[in-house]
Length: 175
Ligand SMILES: Cc1cc2nc3c(=O)[nH]c(=O)nc-3n(C[C@H](O)[C@H](O)[C@H](O)COP(=O)(O)O)c2cc1C
Image (spheres, rainbow, N blue to C red):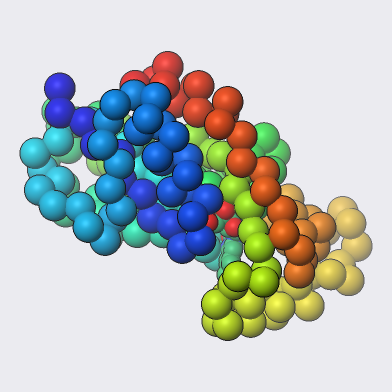
């Protein structure tokens, strides 16, 4: 079996998960910007950081897969919001629906992991996006805040790291 781990990461947390999985499984890990010959692989494990609901690089990468029928696809999202919160999982999955084909969606096994953020390292455009979002949700009553809103409010302007490599175990089982 020919396997590959592909990742989309702006600030490295998703890359850390992908590389740790690579170390544990001996499957090579490559950034989505550098991957070549995606159709040569039987199993594709895609890790993408969550950016405003989008899974970084996923759509662009999986569009290149010609015939999904004999392949196994695993999608792993890495975000700040609580990946055990049911509503959050449902929101992430609803967003994923709009980013990949129905065939891939039907076949893919999807996992959610928690990353981290360091505001001092953010690009201006990302800082500005989060500032706008923060201002829009910070005064909402708690019952109206989503897990994503809460994660953003709690971590706003901070440096936090929720990386937990033990959460890769369930993905290794799936592989
Ligand atoms: C502009 C921006 C938008 C984000 N949107 C989301 C989001 O929609 N949901 C979420 O859970 N986390 C969101 N995050 C947090 C990132 O997903 C989190 O920091 C992740 O660990 C980043 O992965 P990376 O370090 O591999 O780039 C966002 C972060 C930034 C900077």
